[in-house]
Image (cartoon, rainbow, N blue to C red; front, side, top):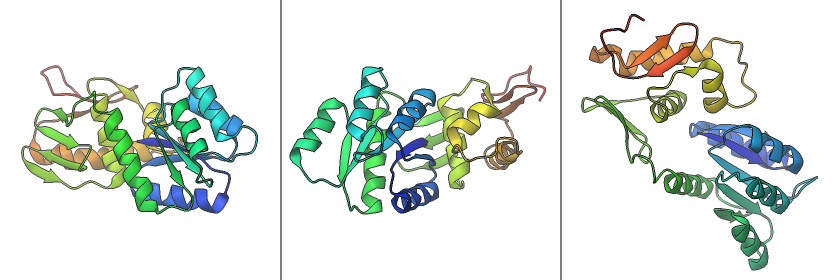
Length: 229
């Protein structure tokens, strides 16, 4: 999951980004409201954490502009004001939740998970291909009933592949969704993580699910007789 954090307090932003990174999320950080609108309209984020008090455009203006442009990315408001009026304004404009500063990091994580579950409710409860299953709620991965332990980044990569099973994903597409904007896309880290993932979900089980499409990228699909990669 890739998140956009819009927060102008550098220490707060750094703390949140570091913690969410440890939870397996890729997090881009923006400290200006105008730039936040541009980023949110350019990239496909799974959720936006939006501070209300921002330079340039404030959080209320950012949210209004996003919703006016039919951007329905889930939004959690962060506010230092514990006023009912501000909360109502944000919720009426289309915010999904809010947190009043200061807050416990664990509560932010719980609210993120709850919102993502709600927005994924129209999709499959479990992501499945062949005998490989991923549970987005428990983060448990199994193949043929055998539990597979993945690192947070391996899990994020597999989740993205499963949401797009059958589709060829370029390295650029993978980088933009699984890693944040500070990632050096000229490294071979994507290929390294694909190989790590393949060694866990494919090699012990015989049938290959994660395929290389030479010159294009990777695809998660069941193997057929035409596979030659």
